[in-house]
Length: 250
Ligand code: SF4
Image (cartoon, rainbow, N blue to C red; front, side):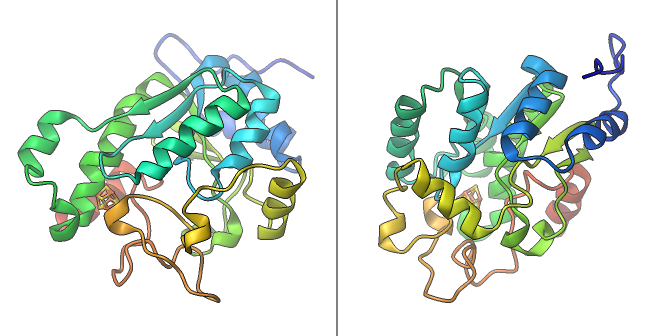
C-alpha cells in the first residue's frame, strides 16, 4: 500500500484530504480493516470513544484484535449506572485493553451550572454539554481522528453514516456504519461476548441513569434515551456550531 500523503505541517491538518485518502482505500471493507486503516493513518492520534453500553463490546472486541493499546475514551459523566462502570472494567480485563481513559466533566462547570446535580431535569442540552460535549472537545485536542460504534440501522441522523467523515477539524470514523443489527448480534454470539448487565432488564441503549429508560418489544432501541423529549443525541456527534445553536435555544 502506498504511504499516506504528507497532509500535515506543524500546525495544519486537512480532514477533507484525509477522508478522501481513507475513502479511496477503506470505503468497502470490514470494520477491522477500517480500524486498521485509521491506525495506520493517524497512529497514536486516533482513538475510539466508547460508552461501554449495550452494544459496545463488539466494536471494542474488533479493535482489540487490531491493537490492544488503541486509546479508548470513556466519558464518565458522573451520572452513569454503576453497572456500566463494572461492565467497563470487565471488558477491559476480558479484551486486554491497555489504554482506556476515563474523561470527567470540569468540576468548575458542574459546580457553576449543576451544583445540585439536577440539570438533566431542567436543561438536558446544557447538562450534556458540560458533562459530555465540553470534556470530549477538550480530550480530542490530542487527536486527529476518532471512531465510535454508530450504525446506519440506528436510524435518524445515523441512517446515512459513511465510514469516514470530516467534522470540526477532525476525521470521524464509523467502522460499524454498514453492519446490520443481525451482524452485530451474530458477531457478539460467535465470539461469546458478555452482555451489559442491564440488557437483561430491558435496556437496549444505555447512557446516563436519569436519561435512560427500558424499551418495550417493537420499540426503536434508542427509544428509551431522553424518553418523551425531542432530544435524541447527546451532542458529541454534532458539530460545535450545532451544539452552540441548540444551547442558545435553552
Ligand atoms: Fe445529563 Fe442526561 Fe445528558 Fe447524561 S444524558 S449528560 S444526565 S442530560
